[in-house]
Image (cartoon, rainbow, N blue to C red):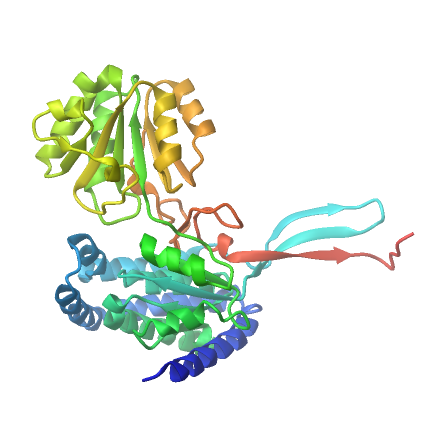
Length: 421
């Protein structure tokens, strides 16, 4: 594919095949979809060495490209991470099949019985960066919900994604489902993304999963509906009634467990009444862990805290850096979050129930937490098996997008010769 006309033709062919596959998947049995996923998981386990070898090529490409440490961590696969990919496929396979489930039903005085029933969306285009495991997660979730998937992974994960995709195709073949149910865009050329965003004839929804630049591009250019997964500018507010040990445990985990995930804490708001006690202890512990703490003027009095500037508020670091600020009360914390949040995940640490209730009522983000690490902001941790992303918009899907969120619905209306007066 050397020119854009070739890419357009190839993408249209992929779209047409996906649409045909989606029509078949819409009535595929739950057993067939489950088998496709378990067989794919077995293939990934069996081909672990080949997947890690393919990933080595991607890591070399990433180093040459000068990717950040956070991006390299997202890209890297080892035996344990490949095993986790296979396990995630098995978890999705074990989920209840949403297609055909009755969401609500009722009778009308006219004699009609009406039910609202889950149906697949159709064809889902997934555009993502870096993480090769998204190839498996996205393909599996789309398939479980009866959708065909067109996957366009990042240029960095090109070889890893191909190796994982080959395992998904093996699963589809074993289950007798159309191989075109999960397709991988076979080029790094960005023209393929631009074309995919306009494929209204074939694609029903686009899911972008990546940084602000990617999501912004998709939102600006797409003519297909979009489930937006924006950056995770995640805030933790330490209330005046926070428990010291719980606060220390949660903040350290939320910031340092994995800095490159979208649920990693990026900003710490500390009630002024506990700055000299809990706040100081948490900040010193973060510094001891190797975190660069950027603080406002009051927090700069603590040894090792560097000055924060205006650009540190509302910033996703995805690194061992955190912004910190003192607030006079919970309402100031809520106001800060309202101004700088990406509406992804926020947390309050407090032992006062009324403070948690106020926070939950007045903060408008997709996920709100109380005394729990923001690293739990993940579809798998929510019991969804996996997620295709965390939607930060308000239309159709919000929060972790799992199998149920990848369905629409139709109304089934049953009468008995019933006519309208």
